[in-house]
Length: 239
Image (cartoon, rainbow, N blue to C red; front, side, top):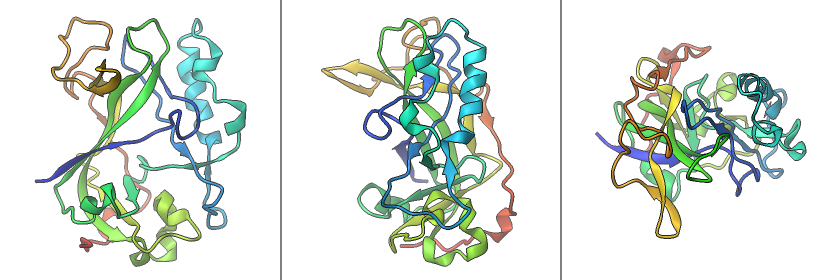
């Protein structure tokens, strides 16, 4: 079995903002990065930040003492197109098939992709950012974008693009063992002048950095049922 760790979600480099996390409970909001202006979408398939705003509002309503700047999208992102990847409802993840993504092109059924994000704590915390696992996929199939018919372009951000690169690949995950975590699992710490993966998981009683623990302790995985049957997935593993 092969496995890889992939950073996802909006951050200072892509979107100039960080999605919120409550370090006392490890509740978080998954906010994707913006889609580049040079990546036009197929008609009626674009996803926007409008879909994220209700989730952020719900998170904020449960924490009325939190500053609005930490739980409300910057004005520059209002209505903008998102690069919704991974898409936890469709249980897909796309990559360019080059550099880091080259290894993913050879992934097979049963291999694992773990997703982590840099989240902004909304309460007093030792760290300015919390690096944490936010989702996990058990691979069901991997295929090049050219192998997907028009009827399936809605399944991933790389398929929604009007001009997809020929090297792009899309992973479909096993719905029985994949999804977004209900609560994140912190894995990072600030060390030697940069944020790095922790050498040791924090003791369960430590509050900040946020408490470590297994997926079961943090509410497990949110399992999504995709709108289309997984039996329709392309099962060719591109080399």
